[in-house]
Length: 406
Image 1 (cartoon, rainbow, N blue to C red):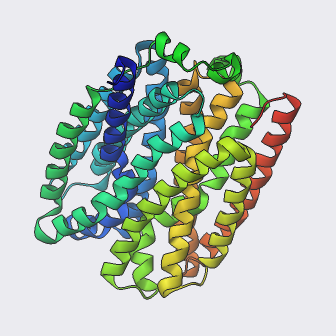
Image 2 (spheres, rainbow, N blue to C red; image 1 turned 90 degrees about the horizontal axis):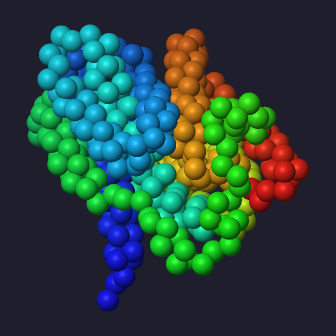
């Protein structure tokens, strides 16, 4: 017979993973992109920025939700996030075909994006508290479900768009996500002290380091570097993500193969999140991040010229590396600044991912307009991977001085 704590753990984890699966369509904009151009008549450059603005709003939601979560707990924030996410998608489905893209930026990017950030941050904080002794694994488990959303919904959405209009597709998805997501939220809870005590862990494992609030953490050099590292690292995949399908077709893939590529990025993204975060528990955060930086650097250089099946493979590897880093970052922040204020501290650092997307995608659009190719874009991605590697190595040196295992 399962203990009450064990049963509560399973329900909480299942609820968290279902929420992540619902809100994970953040990285599916490349599937919606052409349909939105056809329906609304928007320009390609403006449509490319949808993914960037949604990602920025996602990070803003992580920050605001994290601050609120430290006061009211994970469950209310997760419920609010799922509701805001679903409402934003639903509102997008009712926009008229003549609507300016600014309205879509508000409903789809700002509302749905912030809702995603609320839910994502709440789930991460909750699941880390259930696994204080295996933070890397816990984070990887949560964010791998987020990545798997692409695998599950890419072919589904592609099939829906072939049979119904973009508004009806968005409306149907919004209703499904609201029903499943809000239902999953009812199962989310935090562990009691009896469960923590039952793990029989040393104090260092349950707390890591003294918990440092944002007002103190933000004044330290490690915090600045932990913000800067993801800003540089995420450049390559943030630029690649909205163009995977279209660029794949330019590089020789059929439309069905390009859609499959988008779908498979969810699988490798999720695999990277789970495997590399678990590896980081054993190998160390910085060593694992260094491996991922070198992988991203290689992918950036290859994406300058590869086509056909090679393009397919490189995109999947880039997604794997992107997912791995995304899963390790929350655990690294907790290692440095403790678990108590992790939602707020990571919420601020997560803003770097959104800023990276907006800044580098805007630069990418300018480079493409000037050159007519994406070669300069991926050269920039390779350079930023080197800058990220240097930043993470400095963080590693600082952790040794502080006698932390990072």
